[in-house]
Amino acid sequence: MVIGITCGRKENEAHFYLSQAYVKAVEEAGGLPVILPGCTGQKEMTRLLCIIQGLILSGGGDVDPVHFGEEPLPGLGEIDPNRDIFELNFTRLALTAGIPVLGICRGMQILNITFGGSIYQDMATQVKERPASRPGFLPGQGRSGFLPGQGLSEDCCLEHYQKAPRWHPTHKVKIAAGTILARIFGATECRVNSFHHQAVRQPAPGFIISALAADGIIEGIESTSHPFALGLQWHPENLEEHRVLFHALVKACQKEPVKIT
Image (cartoon, rainbow, N blue to C red; front, side, top):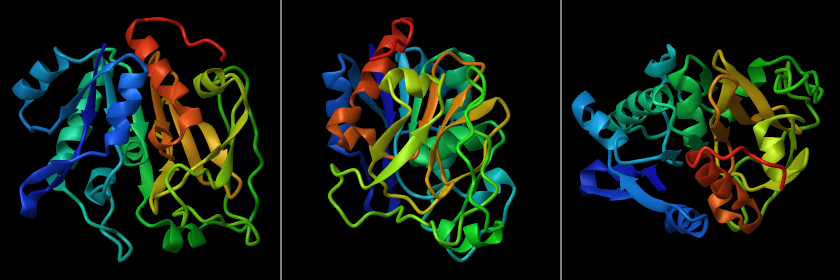
């Protein structure tokens, strides 16, 4: 199975970049990784769709808030307009074509924005807008996922940009029972690494919250209308025990049902 992986760009330095961990994770799962440098033409994107069976939206810089109807705030980081345009359009085409998609960190945010959701431009400044009431972990029936939290608790605000090696998980997430994510892990909680200052704010229509951190930050989303469209806020490519996610992606490309591990 050919798995396309989006990558970052350094326009001023005229090069593309991608962590080797993505490539290694796909190879270990039995897939053939192909790095997608990005293009903005509809014809070129359609041709790319013809050569891949799965898609990974990789991590990277911030997303231009114009794509979710906001003006830039002071906490916004570096953006790449061309990457935004490619990934947003390509993600829509991929899901329309029924291609399995795994969004990682920025990739989860791209997946959410593509279908009408929003994100926090900078959690450190924006989460203070929310009422100080601790959200409960409320699993729904079937694949309904968690109910969105109403806000952060004043005594529970996690460090989401860890000062630890990438292979070390630093905080716990709760996983909603009955979701694809829960079936992949065979569990309703796990520990994750964390390297982000943006996060999903409002899930897109047709997506459910499949994982939450203890402070209410959304850590996982998945589509209810697509067989395999998952977004994760952490970096499973750096966690050996989370490589099962890449195996699940490859199996989804082969149209195999996701089974409990």
